[in-house]
Structure formats: C-alpha cells, structure tokens
Image (cartoon, rainbow, N blue to C red; front, side):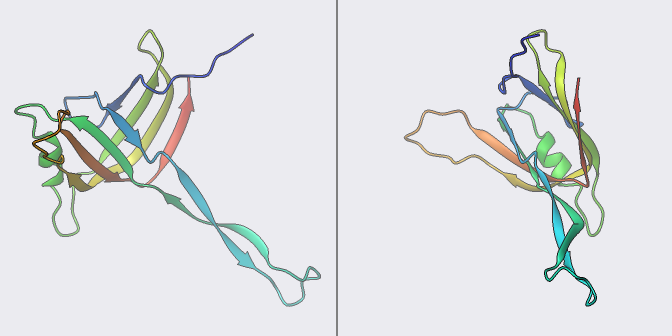
Length: 143
C-alpha cells in the first residue's frame, strides 16, 4: 500500500472556546532529561544515563482577530494567585474529508502569555493575536 504523508495546513484546535480555526500552532514537542548516575563499584568507568523528568514545551496558538471576540483575554483573566481555569486542549490534523488523522491531546492547559498584534500603519496584513499555553502532558494518537 502506497501511503502519502499528511499535509500540515488543515487542522483545528478544540481549546474550550467557540472558534477552532487558527493560522498556526507550534510547540508540540517534549523531551525527557537524562540523569547521569554512577556507583563507585561500577566496572564501567563512566556514568550511566537514566530517564529523568519530562519537559513539555509551551504551545503557541495564532489566529486573526475578529470583532467582538474576546475569548483569549477572558481565559487569560482567570489567572489569579495559584489558581487558573485549566482546560484539556485537542489539536487535530485533518484529512480532505475534515476527519482527524493525528490528534495531540494536552492535559490541564492554561494561558501564560497573550500577545496582541503589531500595529503598523504602512503594512497591509491581518492582525494576528498569539496565545501561549502551558500544559501538564501531551499524548499523540494516529487515527
């Protein structure tokens, strides 16, 4: 069977808001930090590497600003001392029939940064807002 790779321009983000269309999503990466360990009686004269803590990158969501849409800011305003509205976020890479082919699921996400667009009177571009979210874990499902 000859399979073709998925394209990266057809996707949706279910983040708890009404709009699921975004222009860009980045930061879908994670890593495990190695820990070096060696016992004094070990016959190998260098440290062994064992898995340590996992680290998840923050996710960056970008979209064009629409009149009357204040949902990013409303979510950001839920941040208070040691409390915030956490949400599970799902990012789906879609096929031509708008069905998910790859799904990234973020656990307990919350906004850490909201960036308004650059305003420039000499440019003719769409005003893009950016939301950066932290999360506590990611899983990937290939459908």
